[in-house]
Length: 495
Image (tube, rainbow, N blue to C red; front, top):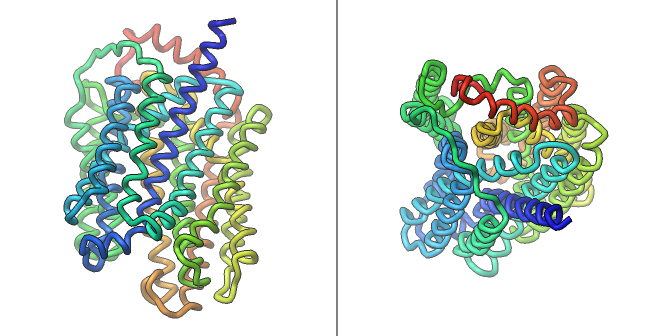
């Protein structure tokens, strides 16, 4: 009985650790946005230069996620998590004290490096700690709720801190949460068993993969300044294509410990869930962007009040996440992804009917609740599905791939849908003074988001196996156990 209680307590601490870490990562992705005008004024950023406060983080985070997942597998998930948290806390502290533009940009880049280590490590810990059954559904439901709460509350917290405490607190707010996560991880996450390293690290693959992903993210996020057809954007995308093709070739032929074993994608759960995740991330990142702009630029609310009005969205995702927990023991994950995606698409289509003379109650609250509940229904299942059937030795890599698909989807969604909205508005989607044109641009962005979600539903229906769900998750442990027994008889690049 004592051992059972001790195990339950350890599992609870592990879940709390991962929940705090995911809340921290999601919060940081959105908390800085509303502080950008004050940051520009305080440190003397000119024009679009202040966007590098966002881009520096995105480049480091998106470019290093795959490597972060591999390091977690090779050097220990707990160790990489603790290292990433310490770096993230230090960078947040120093960023708040920045006196020059370069200091803040460097701090944001360091935050991205830390997040690229801790995010896949935390998700891998969750995958390994809760391999099957109802506990797995509950764990990923809590993870998805914390992810949503961090993203939505980041907008509120960023607005309130910027308006009443100053922009430096959008950096400092991360420090106590990171310290709490370190304490929880130290006591609540079991140390990893020794890792048997039968091959040397794939240094060339790490360099090519990191450079390729960084160039890809740079090309995408830079479209707000340079445009899609500019030499800068095209050059970055061409370079990314060459580097990533070379990376894939190296991963296929290397005799070293591959950064990304390509055999992972033979699993339909992995390939299908990541495609779904990319489309879901593209739609949802643009949802926060268009909602906050509509509330401020069209309805005329201030940053703090606009952030408060996004709270129902966060609560809806939490409700959807806990509904997914209850349904997860009765319905396959594939079904939750289909129905959750359809509900989210319906919410986006409803958002697509917004008007210049709208109100919060009529044009924002209703579609926010429909969209967020649908998002909550599919957020946990897509993460759980992406790691079904993956050997425990590759849990960090699989988590890194999933985090990468979400980050890449978010960047692509903001860039492509933002460009479409700006074109419909007749200029900059956030800078036009024509309220009707702005509203038309935001409505188009929401409608295109509904189309992306429809594509995600098709992926779930056509790619994911029908058995994806409870049975698959139960078999993960037995497959992992068998694969560990056969470890010495298998090629190291085959998951």
